[in-house]
Image (tube, rainbow over all chains, first blue to last red; front, side):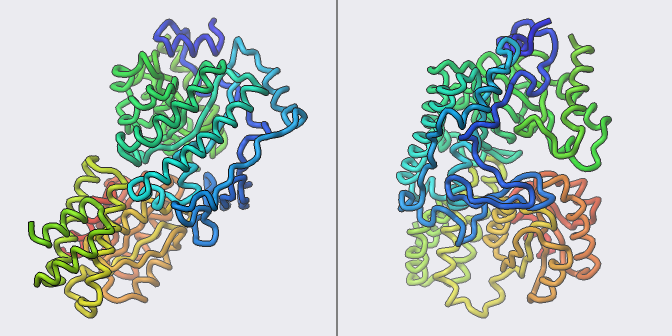
Length: 326
Length: 209
């Protein structure tokens, strides 16, 4: 029996996996580093390292940046330098002790030591200045937007350097939502101009420094951005929703990129979920998308569920499909 | 190209710095304010269609709506009290328990561009607040309820039922990621739209039916 890591490699290269990869099983996520971004507690709010106020109201599935006049960080994009200051990334070795111990405890033959980065560049920009203002500024103030993105890239490169230095990761799991469920937020041409070169630098740095796998999360439609994803160096697109034509994507791009998702979290992870509903969606996605260049997974961006039991039930159902199809 | 045609082209292209000047030039040429407004509404109709078909994306739609609103600012003083220019008032909000506002804001912008006066109640709006807003505003033709989460779909259902029971003459439309036409029909909504462009078309259809 292949290890989780070997099995994933077989799926990616179109070889001979001996079962489906079960969602995030091959990735040991390093979440306790001193440079992991802050998140508010459920029911609370924080001002994060960049000055963004984030609120997680009770009963919600995630946190939201607060963008009223008082809280918005960038009040004028042409003066972004007056408002944006990258946080400190220099921490003593002692601060890394837990993360180093976590990484050392991983059997790297079985799993990838995986560092986690969120939010990514696109989200970071709209955290700082709101979605509407950001999207208009790509047209109205392109120069300032390029400068801001360059600044964020510089920060991400320093972040990557710290991860590499302390943890020698095998993989990076990087979040950045690029679309709604029906389309990308921006056109492929705009994406190519603002984000492709930026991510090429970041992901290129990881690859040059021993990181084997780049996993990028965008739980959205983004089929039109796949050529850019390949160009950036993404190995696995996690979060691919079935509003994308996944079988067609696998056929067209599977040799270059693997697709992870197909099980829309909104359809299986809700208060009145049942194992029967989960079974139906898992079966459908495994049968439709097949064994190669595809990893069945919930679309949400972490190996957790909003309603207890869903994540494990998906795993159980993937096991059942492995027995059936392998 | 006539000035009014230029206004149309520049609104569609989202040239918010140029549109106010062109609107003024069109007025100086003798075009009626209503005629210029209609030209901009038509442009936004084209923008909405292109968005719905995937030809353009959110930024293009946003800058077009901004350009139109800059043009409307020039026309407003000339059209004060001219109710015929409006398709009526539309109350919009994201339902109780749901804090997502980006989709709702886009829909609001497009419905406004189609010729409605908008009252935006924001996010996390209880069903009764929609009803109160109908009572507090004049000429309300439409209530638009948005919900992005599977978990808030019951609140969407409650909002529709509450508004329909209290204000039978007002049309209610719904939208948001988990909403389907079947669900909209099941909860008794008068209309559904899958995106901001079609929402404007549907709003117009419901208000003029």
